[in-house]
Length: 213
Image 1 (cartoon, rainbow, N blue to C red):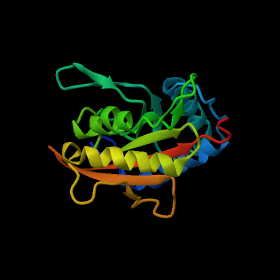
Image 2 (tube, rainbow, N blue to C red; image 1 turned 90 degrees about the vertical axis):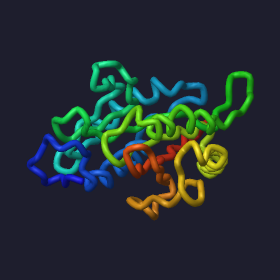
Image 3 (tube, one colour; image 1 turned 60 degrees about the horizontal axis):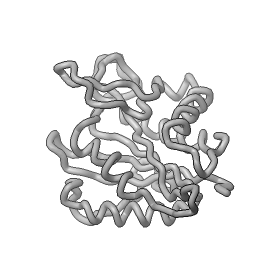
C-alpha cells in the first residue's frame, strides 16, 4: 500500500500507515462525543459523530478528509449505495477507507432488547464481502453499543459470524480476532475474508454508549 509520505496522490489504495491514526481518532473522539439516547437512530448518530470527528482532526497527523454518506458509483455510473463514513487521502475515486455504522444491543420503546448482530453482519459486513464498497484491502465497521455492554455485543456478533462463516469467506475460526493495528485495545477487533478480488480485512470498532439509561 501507499505510505502517507507518497507524492502519488492518485494511488488507488488508502495508505496503510494512516490506519492507526484513523482508528485512534474514532475511539478518542467517541470518549468526548455527547452520548446518544437509547432510542436514537444510527443515521443521526453518525451524522453528528462525523462533525465531531472533523473538529478533533489534527492537521499534522490526520492526513485525510472525512465525508458523511457519499454516493458510490460503479464504472457505468450506476449508484451502488452510500457509505456511512468515508476517509480519503488522495484524488482517486477508488482510494478510500470506509466505515459502515450499525446499532447493537438496542432496547425499543416497548422495552424489548435485541442484539441486532444479524443486521450488523448481513447489512454491514456483507457489503464488503459482496464488494459493494471497497477502497483497497481494508474496510471498517462501527458498532454503536446502545446498552453499553461491549462484551455482550462482541459475543453476539461472533455468533452471527459463525452462522454465516461460509458466506463471509472466512478461513479458519470464524470470530472477531484481536486487532493487528491496535492489539491492546479492547474496542477494536478484525475479521479477514477471502473475496473475489483477494483477501480483505475488516476492522471492527465497538463504541459503547456510556450511561445508556
